[in-house]
Amino acid sequence: MNKPLLAALSSLAMAGLGATPAVAAPQPAKTAAVTVDYSGTVSLSNCSGSLIRFPGSMDNDPALVLTNGHCLETGFPEPGEVITGQYSWRRFGLLDSSSNRIGTLRANEVVYSTMTDTDVTIYRLNTTYDRIKSRYGINALTVADTHPVAGAAIKVVSGYWRRTYSCDIDGFVYRLKEGDWTWKDSVRYTSACDTIGGTSGSPVIDTATGKVVAVNNTGNEDGETCTVDNPCEVDEKGDVTVRQGINYAEETYQIPACFTTGNELDLNASGCTLPKP
Image 1 (cartoon, rainbow, N blue to C red):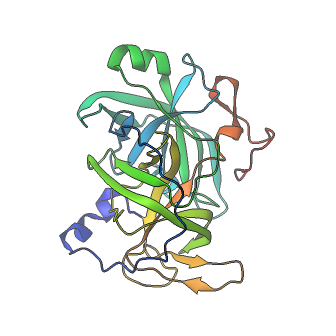
Image 2 (cartoon, one colour; image 1 turned 135 degrees about the vertical axis):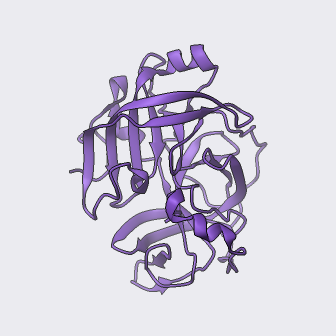
């Protein structure tokens, strides 16, 4: 995983890892990029994240924050574990377009968290989108409800480090295995997105739409096979590929279908495929 900060500081002293670029996917026609900055991103105590909304969210709905499952303050969820409705009083530093911290947001609930099939935590805040907009002038990032596209230009925006990585989606991984966890249909970056510890939970933003298409979560640091901090790719036949220095994210397009009126989680909603408790 792109480790939470305390577990990653020692890696910062190392030189950049020798990445082995993956075979490039076919490139789609490029469209004009939108401006992607830090507005709507957040910093956690040990990770990055983003203030998010869904296509059906309303301005007076309780606001949500997206980060990784492995950034959950109570520790990594176990394989097969799904956490919903857990009390939280976590704080998030809200950033403006220039990466200045302009306020503190507070959660009151872990709405959903898992490291099974995906690697996400979604927090509910004690305020609404319109109140955040009125006080800070910040809009939430919209989570796309369609599958990302290979070859699309993306930016990984870290609220913790106030650093942005620019690259393309190289392709998709049938199964990404790391330690005891397995993730499905993961995003593989081209080598330019050399994310580090503390970037965990960063939104992956499609520069053509400005929408969140994935959440940054891991990379193979040492060339090991399927160990913690060294995920491996497993294809439909069970063949394993290791790409040292290549980093990954988990798709988010499936999340909006699981939220209904008022940003309420409904894992039984039509089209919702997120793992259930």
